[in-house]
Image (tube, rainbow, N blue to C red; front, side):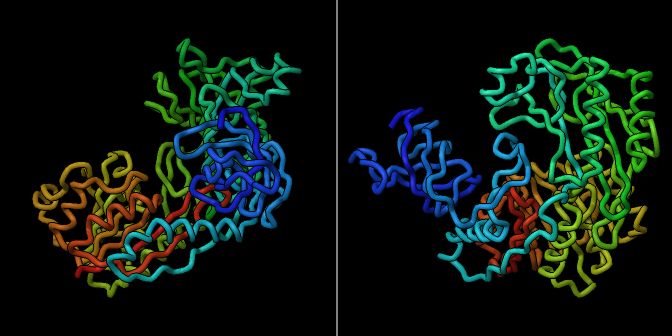
Length: 477
């Protein structure tokens, strides 16, 4: 089997990262003996599909391919509403019926947790589907570029478009290029109005775009945040330097087009790193922050604050964690990787005290502001490097021993030092909230000597993507 060769493939399974898994179909072609049974992963293919696909990568035990023609369509296929789907690097399964999306996400979690069924019994609760499958994101980051990505056929007929000012997303495996986007179905329509206006405004003025190779140019990113609870809207333009006259003109024209905007910020990123944050910022309009809420607690969100991107579903995720913990009102809780304090503040009325630990100092600062906003006197936040032991911080501040520990780590899971600290403290319960069930399983296996897994529950935060959150309850043996 070689790259660029085309075969007819029958898709039998849907696997992680939005790939259909199949074999060469003997009903449609003669299958050579040396590749019979060879596994092929096909992007945007689903069980029930029979496709003609072109091989894009060949490894020892498998190959990857892209669809060239759908010969027999899966009964679960739907029409994707977004015209950028398959080109954009965001949605991976927008053309798969949503009921099937969550079916496969549940199955994915069950398969990842299967090794744990060999050593203990636990309950797998049904996945919680997202209340909204479109317009659910409260934050979107767009990139500026002067290297526009175009499909090959369009590039051949319109090569001059490649140098146009572009505002949108990086395509898959194309970080140096950006695809022009006029609308994204994952954000509310107001965000699309801001996106279209911004692109048109700076294109009309031939504004320069930052290029990391040349280390020059002005425009870098557009970040839009929309609070679902309050309706407040933040526009954050990330540039390489300050240009106050241009920002004032942009502000005035933007507010005429989208008067609902409540604050406009200019973040300055003069570094080579291609990130949508700055070393410092200017507040050009409004207070420089917006307020949103997850359930009862309110949260101040600044330009660079971390906040759950699906506000409505975050409430369900945190409610699941709260229910799993089964608080009686007397517990001491440690909230590890607490970020801006969203879980701490969500649970604080149900417990005696919460101690939140977080590595990022700006997040701890935001958490303390949110504590004041919610008058949560029984919540205390500390800056702590969770890649090292946090026991010295506990001892130095004479923190009481925890009855329950809640962890919500990044995708790479907990550091072994953190696991060791938990095993040293031995709380009665651990509630583990994870955005990556694979590393969650690894960490739970490290805790098995002292804890048994009671139950898990997946929560879909990101429809049309392969990402899935999962909540697990562990109890001390």
